[in-house]
Amino acid sequence: MEVATMASSPTLSSSHRSFHAPLRNPLLPLRSDPPPWLLRPRPGPGPLPLRSLRRAAAAAAALETETHVRRSSSLETDFLACPICYEPLIRKGPSGLNLSAIYRSGFKCAKCNKSFTSKDVFLDLTITSGTTEYSELKPARTELFRSPLVSFLYERGWRQNFNRSGFPGPDEEFKMAQDYFQPVAGGLLVDVSCGSGLFSRKFAKSGSYSAVIALDFSENMLRQCYEFIKQDETLLNTNLALVRADVSRLPFRSCSVDAIHAGAALHCWPSPSNAVAEISRVLRSGGIFVATTFLSSPLNTPFYNEALRPLRQLFGQVTNSYSYFTEKEIKDLCKSCGLINYSSKVQRAFIMFSAQKP
Image (cartoon, rainbow, N blue to C red; front, side, top):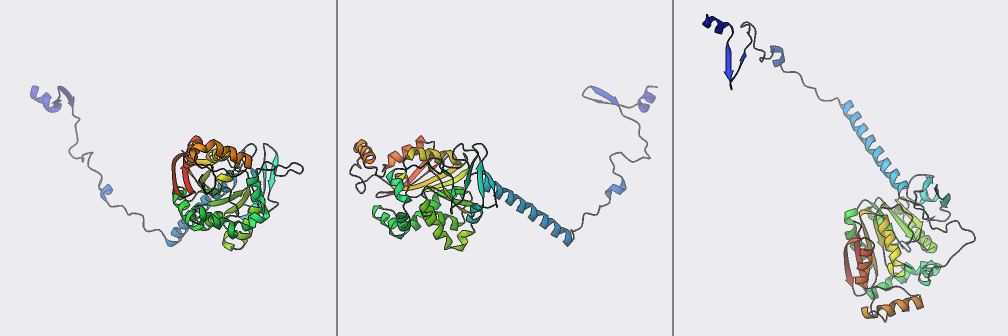
């Protein structure tokens, strides 16, 4: 009787637990065995027809073009800002950052209700743009470069004299700047205090940047820049725009520019601290500032010694002459404006320095 019970209801013991195994019909296959039809190989998808491949390639190309257009549209409209309130400008006109598109476009600040146009060959984004009665003069060293004569002579002998102070020359300076700008290649570059566009044209022709903005306060320098650009058809069709603006009131949104260059300019600025602070404001995180200037030396001031700094500053104010600094002063200024990773190259009274936005 005991044997019969065990046969009809077998019990397995494991880890002090037991369960009753269900009865199975020996004529049926085990549940773990797959049906024979599942074992047959299924035919995989064959190669796509040539027509389908062409459609897929066309769709991918269209998507890439659309993405590029969106990025270009964002670049063309997002970084320009009102010099009064720094709100983004609303643009009406053809798209593009070339000279023709900018000339035929109008810009307006919705907050200040102020309009900015390109009545001349450049887009005027100064605070006094559009005024009819009011006018103001900058320091003599700034007004000097608004002269038509100086603008005409700048690349016809004026700039060549810089080699006496150790400037290596435009071609070598351009190569040095390009080395500093390598981490931000492909981004937006602004050439502040561009003068007649000597370096703006080089940056634009290099193809290293998505767009180049040639910016200066001098109307005649920008007109001279345009005269040089007209002589090169490739520059007329590149993303190179001429903008009149004050370096101490840059018409760009905060954190919107990848690279800023200032060639032989810092010593001319009415307030270098305000200018570098503005440059720091508009640079993106990781953006790079590169500049050249004349160091304080016996070549340009009798008070070049650091101990005579107060006399040098007083002399500059009384005579309204250029502001020459020591390298320590320039490094300290960059640090004070929130820039890091300062580095420099010095040759006699020439210095090229670079600093980065954290």
